[in-house]
Picture 1 (cartoon, rainbow, N blue to C red):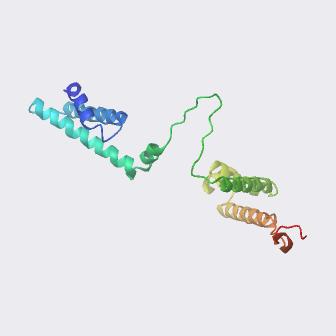
Picture 2: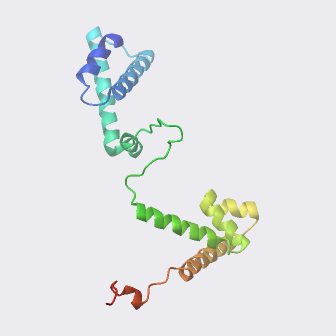
Picture 3: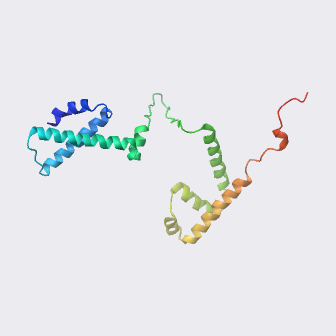
Length: 188
């Protein structure tokens, strides 16, 4: 019965989803029907079974459409993702079309400055910041590992962030003086 209904259902509902998604929905619905039969569900006729397959299939199609339209953030993101086609060797760069190049450059320079300035922190401060940023390690795990109190961890992290902020402010690009703001010209 599943083989007989497959082509008809995929053809009739081709406007709802991509072919691959329809195939997936059909497979899920057939699997659910097989499990229902194994659990003791009985169908009164072939027509009853055919309609049950169609209802189950439509249910899966509607679920998939809701997931794609945004109910499932993961499915919505996957639906909007672009396929990475690497025709040439070494052509694996991914272009973020949403990012502004100037913003990306400024953020990268800021990260480079932070990395350079972090070398001026105390070893304990560097260790706390590195585990917070790089490893994502929490306070409890860090304190157990290094035999610290939670208060010491909090204070060291607080001082490290404050010191980094202070160093970033001190190294900020100076604002131009008034002479540099004058209009360009040759004064002829």
